[in-house]
Image (cartoon, rainbow, N blue to C red; front, top):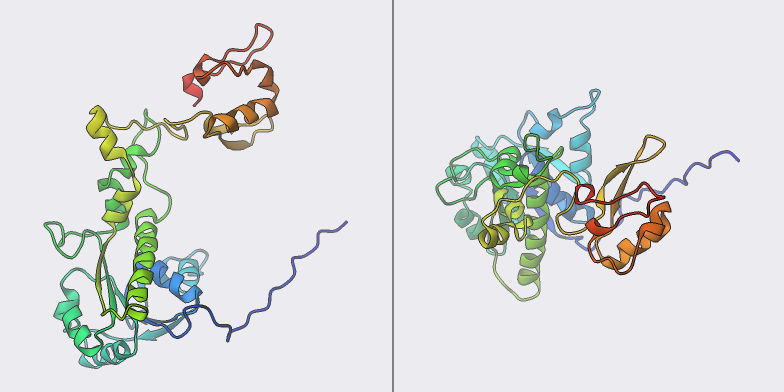
Amino acid sequence: MPNKKPAKKSFTPDARGPLDGVRVVDLSRLVAGNILTLQLADFGAEVIKVEPPEGDTLRGWKVKGVDTAWKVYSRNKKSVALDLRSDAGRTIVRELAKSAAILVESFRPGVLEDMQLSPTDLHQINPKLIIVRISGWGQEGRYRHKPGFGTLIEGYSGFASMNGFGDREPVLPPMYLADCMAALNGYGAVMVALREVEVNGGTGQVMDLPLFDPLYSMLGPQAANYKLTGQVKVRTGSRSTNAAPRNVYETSDGRFVAISASIQAMAERLFRAIPIAACWSRRSTTWANITCPPSGSWRMTKSMR
C-alpha cells in the first residue's frame, strides 16, 4: 500500500491559549530570551518582539539562506523595529510597558539603566510589571562586566569537563544548552511571579537570570560528590557511573542503539529479551560479575557500562 500522507492540521490564527490577554515586551537578543518568550507565546501570550532596525542577530543564523532559528524561536510573536538609542524608541518601550505584564531583556548589566529604562523607572510606570534580566553572570558580582555567551558558561560551569570521553578533550554541547536551561528556568519563574501578581495581589518583581546558575544547578550532586570523595568526575562518554548497561551500541546492520537499564528489574528484563539471556543469573548483584558459560562468547565487564 502507498504511504498515506499525514492529515493536514488546520491553523487557526484567532485560537486562544491560557495566557491570552498577557502582554509581553521582549527586548532580548539571540537565544535565551527568545526561547523564554516562545514558551509564553505558544500558550497564548501576546509577545511583542522589539528588534533593532537591522533586525535581531538571531536572524543571521541561516541554513541555505533561510533563517530557521529565527522562524522557530520567534513563532507566534509580533515584531517591531525600534532604535533604543533614540528618545523616540525608548518612549515607545515605556508606552508598551504600561500595558505589559512581563518585560524581558538581555543587555549587558547597566545598559538598561543607561537608557533610563531601569526597573525602578519601569515600575514607576507599571508597579505590577515582571522584569526578567538575562545575562551571562548576573547583574551583580565580580563577573557582571564579563562577556556571557553560552559557550563560556558551558565551559566554566564544569559541564564540558564532564562531557565526552576520558582520553579526549572536554566536549561542548552541540546546541545552545546554557541558553535553553536559563530560558526554561526563567519561564517557570515568570509563571510563579505572574501568579503572585494576578492571584495574590502582589507587586511586580525583578528577576536576575544568569545563564550560569541554571546550568550549574543542573549538574546536580557533582559538587557534593567532590566534597565527599575529593575526586573530579571523569568523562565516561555515553556510559553511566550509576547504572549498567547504559551506552550506545553498534548493531549487526551497522546502525546504533541507545540502551539504558537504570534499575535492577529493567536490566533483568533486558537480558531476558536478548540472546545473552542464558548468561543472566538472578543471584548476580553486579553486572561486572556476569560471565557466559563456556559455550557462549559474551562477557560483561565494567568497560561496557
